[in-house]
Image 1 (tube, rainbow, N blue to C red):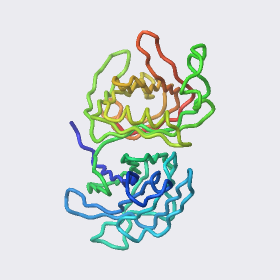
Image 2: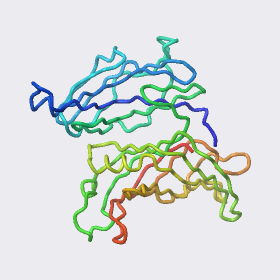
Image 3: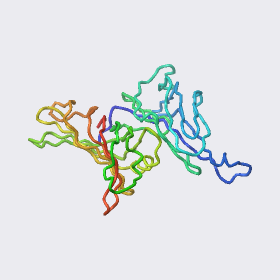
Image 4: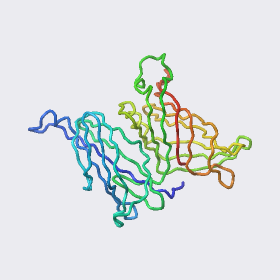
Length: 311
């Protein structure tokens, strides 16, 4: 098991429902929730980090723009429903022991991110950042040292339209950003002689996020798949180009599946032994999102995908 020299921090947006049988609370308040945005946290090495200069634009049953993020925790009240939140402004991360000095960070999560406010439940939305270097930061929730597979799938068609109406119908014609992130992974190598040298990646449990327009179906899929494990391979061909061998991320409880097919060869880094290097990659392929229905087969949507990642 390897730990990347690439820290990660997560900004957590906590949607806390506040309805209930409370005397004097009207029907509007009973259906509302409070959005809490913790903007600071400590890392395992004892350093504190803060998100600075951010604005948050929330769109849904209500439209709210939060520009005053000077407090450590920002609050706003929202009606129940489906929303998106967009991180904007001249945001940056700072280590609190070095105020005024920005820490380089890469935002990986789709932006905006969908979320829902449900009366009587606690929801979480996380903007995930990567910090280069050896410092790990935990803004709001946790820290990880892993990689990711991300990109956008343009869903152009149903896979099995003859099955009739489907909860996936709403996704046809939409471009959906996605992020599959993991805290750590194990890497192994195998030489298949004429078939090329393979770098095999096995992650620990993943976090799945979808961007774009709010979708109850995508929210169900992301929730179900979070916690699954990911397997994929990168292969060096005889030409020296690299091919992505494909992946299937599946939740076996609710039977959702995200598949990326093997790619055409692309240019990428190769190590001194002739194997794919464990570095960032990018390619085009076909993506599918489906539900598996036991003996009745499957149904879902498919289309072209642009993908990037880090093992």
